[in-house]
Image (cartoon, rainbow, N blue to C red; front, side, top):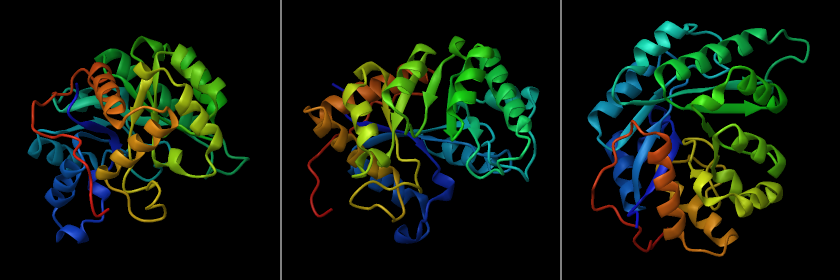
Amino acid sequence: MSAYLVDSHCHLDRLDLSPWDGQLDGALDNALQYGIGHMLCVSISLEEYPTILDIARQHDNVSLSVGVHPNECDGKEPDTAELLRLADDPKVVAIGETGLDYFRQSKNSDLEWQRERFRRHIAAAKQCGKPLIIHTRESTEDCIRLLKEEGADEVGGVMHCFVENWDIAQQCMELNFHISFSGIVTFKSAVELQEVASKMPMDRMLVETDSPYLAPVPYRGKTNQPAYTRLVAEHIAKLRNTSVEEIAENTTDNFFRLFSAAHRQSNDVVLRPLTGR
C-alpha cells in the first residue's frame, strides 16, 4: 500500500512562509507530518519558472511543470520551441498549467490569443510526450473542443481543480484526462462536485491543494498549504465511505502513472493520526 499522499498541484513559490520564519523547508516539513510525500509545483509564467525549477532541484520530493497560465498577460509569451526546451529538464513532468479562463475577461473581448496559447501548449505536450495540466473557468465548452481538435488525448493529463458536473467529468475522462479535486470539494455548497467525487472511478482521481489558494474546510478563507491535501483526501474518503489510506494508495499510484517522469521516492512518510489540528 502507498505510504503517502501526493499534492498534485501547488505553487510553492507563492506560499506565505511567515509561519516558518520565511523558510520553505518549514512548509515542506509540515506536509511530511501530514503524510504528503510528493508535490507537483506548477508553473504559471516563464518569469517565475526559474524559481520553481530551483525549488524542485533542491528537493527530491518536488516535481514541476512548465507553462503559462491563461490569465497571464504581461509576461513573456511562450512558443512551442521554448516550452519544449524547458520541458527537457528531468525535473519537469508536465506541460501547464494551460487552458482557457474567460472569467476575468470582458464579454466582448477577442480571446483568440488564449486559444492560440492553449494550442501551443498542447503541441508541446504531444511533442515531448508529457501530460497536460488544464485550467478552465467559464470556458468548458471551448476547452473540451480544443482538446479534441488538437488531439490532446494522445498525451492526456489532468483537469486541475475540477468544479464541473458529472457529465463534463465523463467527457474529460473520455479524452484521457484525470480529474483532480481541491479544497473546494469540502465546501458545503459544492454538492454537485461532491457527487462527482463519489462517482469518480478510483483510477482516474487525483487530489491537490492549489496552495496557497482554496484552503479546505476548516481553513477556508485562510492561506492553503500542501499539508492540507490530507484534508481533501479525508473528505473524499467520507463521501465514498472508505478510508483515507485507500484514497492515498490509489491517487498516489495514479499520479506516478500519469506523470511517469516523476521520481517515486521510497521514504518513511506515512499517514499517521493527526492531533492538535
